Length: 173
Image 1 (tube, rainbow, N blue to C red):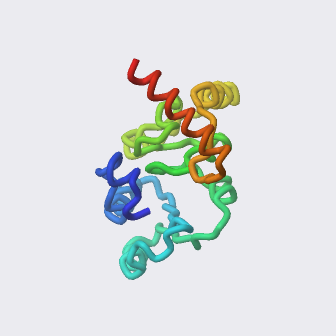
Image 2 (cartoon, rainbow, N blue to C red; image 1 turned 180 degrees about the vertical axis):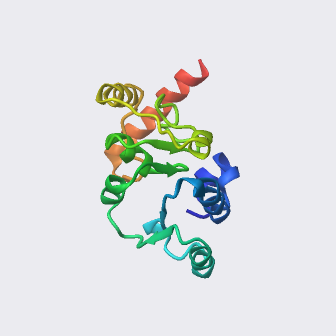
Image 3 (tube, rainbow, N blue to C red; image 1 turned 135 degrees about the horizontal axis):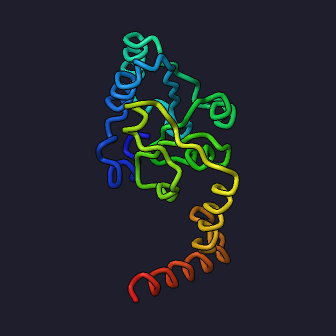
């Protein structure tokens, strides 16, 4: 997602997503796999379509999906998921798919993630058990605060602000 805060502040190395896609294709070519991409449904057209199509012409193993295709179906058919900082990484963990996380997401400390270097070197993905997944989500739940980011109802704003105050007290004390 171009101009996404998570990229501009916490994943500068991957800010130019087309360059990263090209690097990913080049470094995994020896494994004879397809690289599948899709635009973020909320940012359709944010990346110049002619640049994406030029990559498609250059690399026959690059597959471009429609932005509205169901993410769960895509993950289910995938060998692994590579994401910078996306809900898709969370979904991949839930679906027990090997995950490579490049950005600073809340799931980046999941011990079973596969480092990007491993993908490039031997394509052996880390596996994880149902117990690993349950333990991971239990830790997320235990460290979560009440409130929804985009819910503007007064009751939610009150919960959310209380959570932020409590978080700041814990963080600065």
